[in-house]
Structures are given as structure tokens and as C-alpha cells.
Image 1 (cartoon, protein in one colour):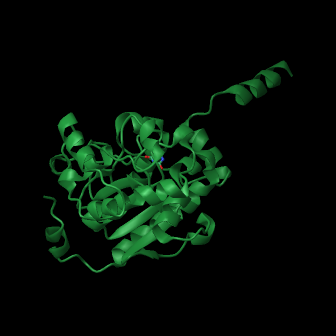
Image 2 (tube, helix red, strand yellow):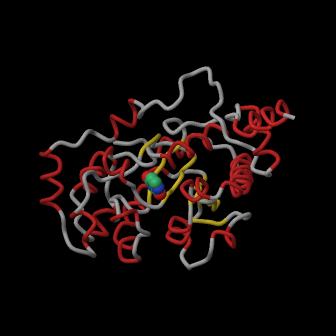
Length: 279
Ligand code: URA
């Protein structure tokens, strides 16, 4: 009797090992679990030389030049629509179009391959992103990296990641329509410069900004939408998935739809890349 009690306690309190954890998740219907693949090349490398060259590091001089150029709408809209990569980051860094500039530490324009076929769009920078100036570097970013790895991709290769907002909203609150309206011109310009073959909208802010309307994620999932002429797939935001594990399986379905959509697209003849070579 005493031995049986000890055995029960041992089972009850033993820290589950990895196999146990997977079995538990499977039992709960929470698999597949995303894991980084063992890749031949190292994963999670910062920006490529090409991106670095196309997006020069900001210094006070470039910010000052862009600040001097800051003009009110509609000139602002026209100016952003004509931006090239060489001026893009400086222009974002100088932006004062909404109040978010007052509390930001860094602007967060975007990261990745400026000739990417895939583009992922999130909502807005959080604290980690505001500190580093790069999108999706916190916990949600690690999940996004795992999602990319599950598709055999990584953030600096054939993928570009951006947000609707380039500045952090206080306490990570949802962007207001005014903030999204003011900032979306930068996102529109990024998409025009990159000309991705496919966009994945991560969460409702990205989906409704790019598609218009006010639909829910649940109603937008599972079909191919269009942003201008670019196919667009809607899925859950990684931060939501961290809080709602069962929906990871649905997000995986969305990524499979995105991959199938990409594979069904006509093969690029190279003309598009040549036309968008950054200056
Ligand atoms: N959430 C987002 O939408 N974007 C980030 O960059 C980080 C968290």
C-alpha cells in the first residue's frame, strides 16, 4: 500500500519529458507542434548583405534630411508612394504622422529579403521590437520563425516581414483606425517595391488593413483573397496562437493553403525581380 502511494506520487509530480509532453499535446489535439528543422545552413541569421546594402543604417544625418522633407498629406502620401529603399527607413524614422512617434524608441520598418516571394504582415511592434528596431523578435517572433521553419523558410531568405504600424502603440494596444490609415502608406509602398508573389496576413489588423472591411479572422480564413493583384492568405496572429494553442492546428492549415497557393502560381520568368532591383 505504502509502495503504491509512493509510485502514484512519483508519477503525479514527475516533470514530463519531451516525449510525454508531445503525447499529452497529441492527446489534447494540440499537435502538430512546430519545431525548427535541422537545416544544413544556420537558421535565424540577421539581414543579408543585399538587404543591408538596400537599407542603409540610419544615422543622425539621414534622419535629419528626412525630417526636413516631412510634408503634410496629401504630399506625404505622394512622397511615400515614390520612396525607394535607399530612403525608406529614414523616412519612416522621421515620421510624425500620428502620436505614436512621441513614445517610440525605434521605428520598425521591416526585415528580410527585398526580393522575397513571400511577405508576412503583422500588426505593430511590441516592446522587444521597439527596442531592437526589427519586427517579430519577441516571443511571437520565435513562433513566427518556427512557422517559417516548418515551411522550410527563414526570415532573411525569400521572406519579408513587416507590420501595419511601424511604431509601438502604448501597452501593445490594438492600432486605432487613424494610426493604421496614417501608416498604411508605408506598407503599401513596401508591397509595391517587393512585389511579393503571396502575402500572409497575420491577425485581424493586417487582414482588415490590407483587404478593407471589418471581417473576423474566422470568416476570412480558408480562402485566397487579393491585395491588388497579389494573392493573400489570412491566418491567426502568432501572439494569439501563443495564448490559444488549439488554434495552432488551424494556423498550420492556413500555411499549407499558402504553400499550395504559391506552388500553383505561374513560374516567375525573372523579369519581375529585375524590375524591382533596389537602387
Ligand atoms: N506583433 C506584431 O504584430 N508585430 C511584431 O513585430 C511583434 C509582435
